[in-house]
Image (cartoon, rainbow, N blue to C red; front, side, top):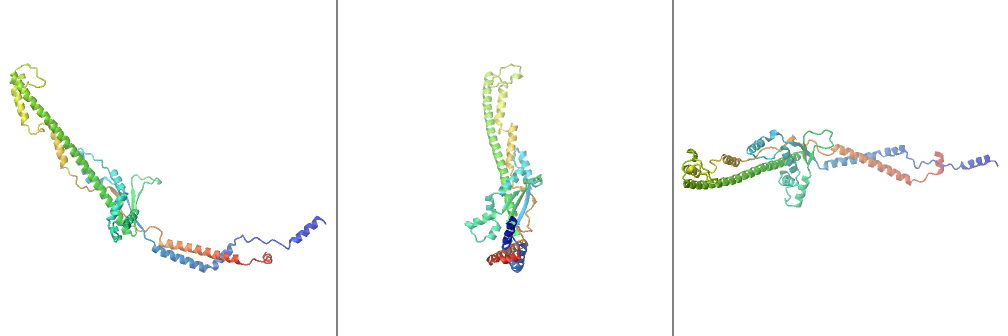
Length: 379
């Protein structure tokens, strides 16, 4: 038998047993779409149920409104009264290091103070109206205060990621509440509270500086008066000794009046003569106040009097300037009801499609295997 005959016989023997096409691992998209189309009512019903659930959730979710304010350091026009006081102090040689930048930095530091925030909320009308039944010493009240302080935010607008650098310093202050009116009221009230604190601290600093300067000048003046009084007493004592020496020497008139030459005593001068020394001694003793013949002492006494008369009253000035005053929010934070409803509907549709396809796959898995004859016929 030739090799050609063997090959033909083997081909004839294999033909009754053809290999079926491997379609078990393939995905027929048209079949899946047909399955989904057959279950369209169920898919639409589930998607509608999810959309309705999303709408209900959007009404149940707590409302959040945020009020914002933008502030910058104070300008010169807002510091007129304070500058007037500082000028009066400078005239009296008192330098108080108060600048708009320093005061603005003090305001920012106080605004972020946790203790000041809690102090404000403990006495604020907002807390009293929203938590009327809570005891101020209870743990629940303290937790409520802490939650409110966490809603106060402050952001430096000089962001390093910004492409354009602003030529001035500005901060954004904000507070979030359940209603727009509450958000604006709390933010406005806390800003005013911190600003009043900064103004009082600055005023107290000026008053303390004035008091210390006045005390220093008064004590220094008292010491100088004692020193000059001692000098006058010593001078009077020397004049008494000079008078005794002049009388002992028999010099009645000034020695320069009659052409006499006298070697004057370096400790007790007698050149004036007994009469001149007597008159000078009388004048020195007649002086009631040591400052009568001392212009420098009189000037310093006047300086101390002016310091004592100066009274730093409450100064009305602002530590910052509003670029945007606390706003009344026009739009609540987060997603709107329509977006939540649509997203929930999409999620429901995806879940419904997954359920339908999974159920179809489970049903197909439980079907009996297809006979080889049917596979051959379909091929």
